[in-house]
Length: 304
Image (cartoon, rainbow, N blue to C red; front, top):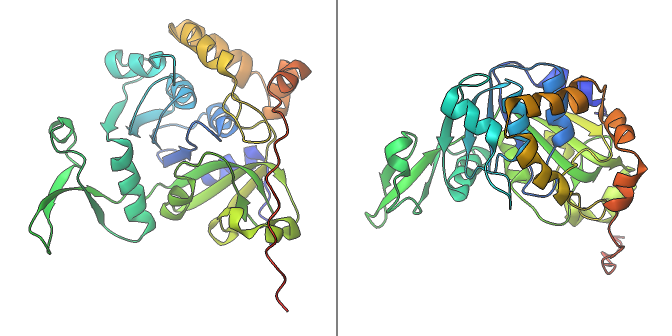
């Protein structure tokens, strides 16, 4: 059964006000187009969960969508602070935003516990840190085998996971290559899953290379075909990271007026990602086009 929807339809149907939303992708495959559609639809009171809330969550917070951030690290990668999030946390502008901080591994353990059907996950990496004093979700548990005291984090079940990938079939069988984050774990942990891909391919293409299938269609609720939907982040084999954008965002986001002007020009006043790319012009795709570097073929053999 096809699960193909437009971005507008997928966000309208599967992201509700007040939801816990996990838009994942680690440097690579960040679902910017989905974030922009949530801004257009004026979603509100969202709890935004992400290992690294970078520019897309900065934009969503600036647009007033978030009531809370759950994260493992926060910043503009390689550049500095996320100024819109700082304004929200420190000054309550455009609205106050609560923060709940973990390490990367700590938040991964919350997602992994949920994906595994467990109520919590033990770990060691909060010894000697101050995080337990500011995050009441960080508890301790005694190992039943050794008696050792360990840190523990509760399972986190997002209402909806949004992940970007290279390709999927119409049923949602989703293939990813290159740098991985926690896309698989967050898909299995979440109540609903929206997959955004660079291209929809036939089922035969998916079956021809089964080990690349990271998320099976059986847990996917909607599939959106959205070329360049991860810009300014990158998609291995399709386009490179737009480093110039990340550097420019530091200047743009230093004032609320700068962010609002950006959102008006590049989000609110555009209907979708296709309009976004047309506004950028052909030069953007040419500048970010990677050199071909195909993998060596693998012979899986044919079952008889």
